Image (tube, rainbow, N blue to C red; front, side, top):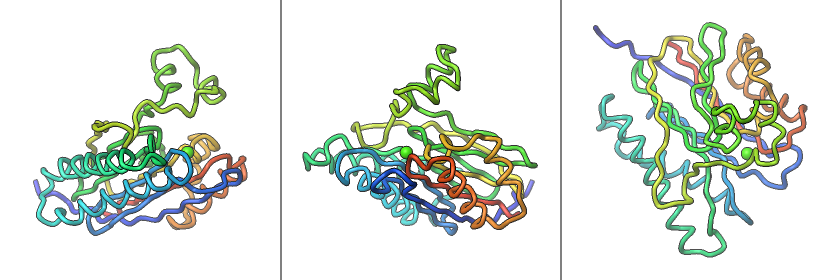
Length: 248
Ligand code: CA
């Protein structure tokens, strides 16, 4: 059976929010290479910003360099290798400069080839898919509280209030090696993917996000609505959202 080529288009916004002095989130994408990335950096001084932007730049650079030579079947391996290389770049830099020691970042990556998609994540930045008006979370957070919720030791409401809610159990760049979770998906025309940081998902419920993504406005307008709603709800953290729609 012939594979339909699904064209995708994207829009993204990152915002400092209302409480933080700087923005440690970063995003980047290439419609041409079918690569979409959102990162949430951590570390003292400017280290978080360095880690998140380094991660985005490395993955985009490596997938662009190799992208056109790689067919669909090899594409997820390419994306995973690019993420591993980004991990190494951040880790090496933090080892060389004591002011950057311990810096790291989350990453949620979406790779699209024809009608196939791969979602890879490290940390608590998320990917959701909206299909036929229903929002579904694709990724599972690598966070202490999420792990407690999964084994039934904590409710979701307790997790949101927990003083440990910021503790993530996997990060890019804090160790010499890291393994992302990988989700392979088939894309249907009209599917919309949301990549976002916890600055969005801690302020807005999935139901609120779903209803905003079901509006008839453009992707850019939907990004603005999501970020403005997160800021209105408190804007306690940096907030980033990236929307990708498969146009068919
Ligand atoms: Ca954050």
